[in-house]
Length: 529
Image (cartoon, rainbow, N blue to C red; front, side):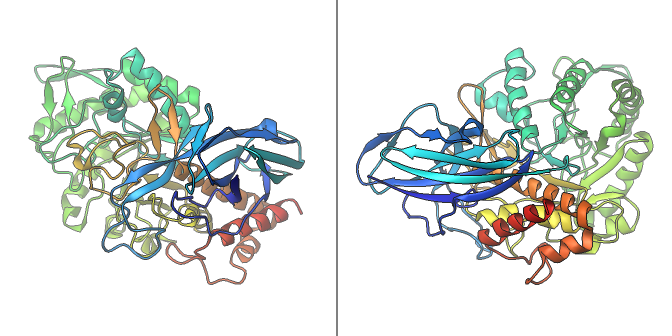
């Protein structure tokens, strides 16, 4: 005998606890939307089960088993109270396509995740999921209105080294390109349309004087004081990304993280290191290298037809005491890479106020001074944004905390969002590689889930996490609100969103799954009124 509980995608089903959420089995969705729901189950004895999905909507459904992974660090000592749990343990996160039966254990709760995605006509569809002798029917009303295309630029940093390390293949080998393409396609399928492009090995989360595996796309040859550049690998990267459908390219940082004091690792065609931690960023030799590189790169980007879609970085997360050196490098980069847009994750308003950057990307807990004062509002979050109810997506956080970002991005008319970890399979500071099925907290450096939202399956395929899917739902919320705004105007849409609640900010909003689900139902109804 199985006990079944129908749930939304926002719930997390822990093995040792019956879900307390109210059952939900009726949903609406718009054309062009992916709808997800869950069926939690527990058995009273050892039994083998395989789902059977029938009904008028069954042809649109894909089913996944939700698997647990070990959480070493659920949150930080000073994190806020908005976590499902704070202790280490096994947490639900991996979505594995149903290709084999599951062995259900007595008293253990598991979940089946079902996605409804198709171009069926508007109408009512029933989806019956049978597990063993029990079944549960879900009802989905597909509405006529269509979600508009995503306009938000969303970059979730794609780290190329972890794939080579996990699969033990050479970077840029044919086997590597095949695996890389699968993860790039997964990223794009889930809303990533702005891709970090490693001109040189990105100087991100790397121990001082340490190195990450070389993932350099630009070939460099130095003869005397003259450099020549080979863009063959970069061309292959652009060709692949164009085929997949990426809208923009985030060229990797040209100075080290947290201060811009050094050069990134740059190797020549033989693999010999030319620049790195030992290189003073202000040194004449590195500045000359960058000038020659810019002279070659800009016409190449024009030839590729991507120059207008390219953004350039100076350094990630500089602080106020880095302002002088950042300002110097930013002015230099903007001069020699004329025509490319400069963006950087930084949270002190002075960098913008003093004119050093036109597109700052502040953290969502430091965004207030930027709202209404910058021509393009961007934001990001990472490990630090877990103390005041900010949206984030650690494994221990509830679904609403992940999904609310869509409403916030819409309300404040953000044009871009950044997160640092799509597939970071290293320890903190990249001291050693990790297996994400076994280590989810970067070796104790971050809260579990901060570093990645996908898993590299043993067969070269990519497995999504529930957190990746819920974030895509946030992006769909944003698009649905944009659709309603186009129909009834911004003010009327905002009035619907904030009806009966205090004004939404990046730290204050209704903290329940039920409110978010109800909001989408109200928005959907108005979009089709």
